[in-house]
Image (tube, rainbow, N blue to C red; front, top):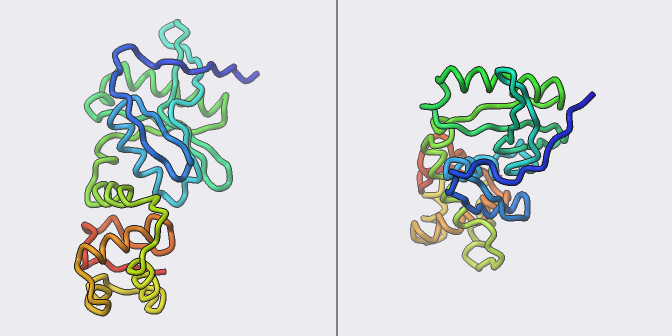
Length: 211
């Protein structure tokens, strides 16, 4: 019989870093209980394989050292096939502790056997990795802009005609400053109209974009 998941209220009294992440993907504010969890939202927000995600979802119980313990994952993540996984966010300094590793193994077992979900561990070494982390933060800064300027339309039109182009060429052809070119491009990147490689280098006029 599947175990009953409990409603999560407050994870721990010593957690004070409650942050709010504005998610266009979820069309809602995502509240996290740490800055590291907040930083992970940038990856979830712009990962094309993620359809939606929840912070502090319903938790479940597991047994450890003869005691019944309750556990709330940091995130519940859904893909486009509606498959879902639990995510646990931890600093790498904590994951080598014997107590954590034993508890986490039991949490993973219950998640898989009782709820048919993987429990995945993610550390700051995977989250705060550059250049992608800085690029995603930059992208998020300009996401959700509703007004479209004439300059932005010209930039999109030129990229669509070329299909793939370096932003330096966009700037030169349209006679735009570096700032105008990058800001206009970020608006279309955030809406999914065009794409780029955020993993290889800092976003700049050297970046290539494509439709």
